[in-house]
Image (cartoon, rainbow, N blue to C red; front, side, top):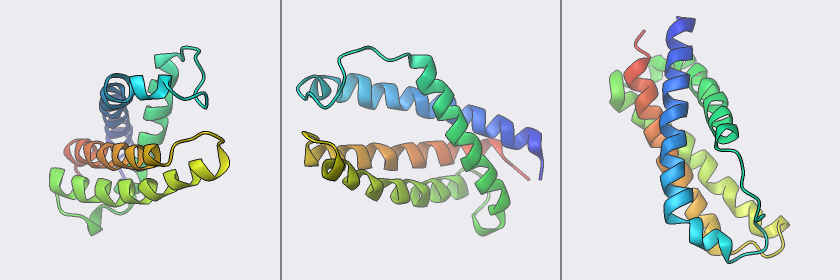
Length: 132
């Protein structure tokens, strides 16, 4: 395994997913969040989101590198990897309405969709950057 490529792929995917999440959560779903008390009204640090996105993407890049023989080469393999990763994350969002009072059920579907998009986008970037 080439650790330099893994780290570069994780950082690149983390930054791209962070930007995609800004569009999806900040611009598209931002007004929706303001309608529900379940979300805090305090502004969060965008750099904390960047840190978390890169941290998660580093593990995704490592997982992709360890299983790269199972995927097609390049962006297609990365996108397929990301699709399965996003599908795994998709269904975890349906736990939120069960444990968070006031969490709207339809928002679980929205978050599942954003996780699916994040997975495909992040996986595509990882597949483009990580080439064994």
